[in-house]
Length: 288
Image (tube, rainbow, N blue to C red; front, side, top):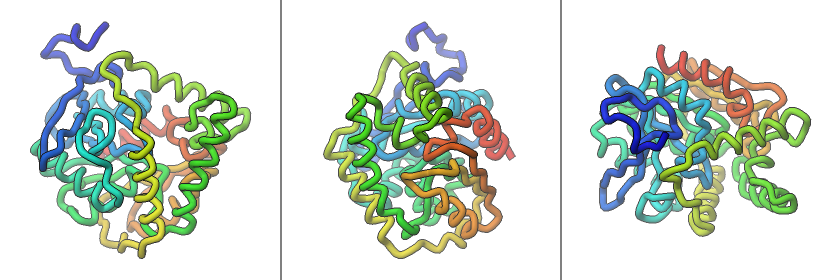
């Protein structure tokens, strides 16, 4: 079934069939997809380094979209969005704010992963009234210990993946063991389920600019996360090599009342390896 075959009045709850849309704000045209029943608080997804909308796991988005209005989008300079990638996380948060307000939302829930979680923190700190509930997966705080080492780890794993012609995410997101390897293959396969209106990959220059922004974030003075009063769910694998798992514990200590889930025998992509369990936890948390 093609997206064009979907009846106009039907609620799309499959990410593979989510219609592609655009909205313009501040001279930038943002590409986005939306699915699930409209009304209530929308859940906006903030993506990871080098990610387009095609990098979201449908096994996490689809359960969310059964009862919630879900939106994914591309930052400026990514995929079908116009403009250029900014060189700081703060600027990315400003762009996210422009996109969200252009859609007319006054309150949202945020689901974020990795670099997206860094952007989400800045957004929630700067616009406290906008974000109701916050999911921070596979991420860490501004100025967190070893956060700036993401760059070296990323390049090393891209090199390792190139030797076997594998997707770098198999190395960056998953342990290279008996449980991690098949989980990685299954995750990469799920990302191919959408066959129409797919994004073009992030350019090398955009990717390098994002890496610089992450390094700057890692080397900056810490933010005052005690100012975050949003109910917050923090999740990671127990062996995250990209954004060390200890940084999730750091976030948990610094965000009062937050909930922490650490998944066993998994890495940066622990939420994707344990997608069934995590999707239930995230849906329940955001529905509270």
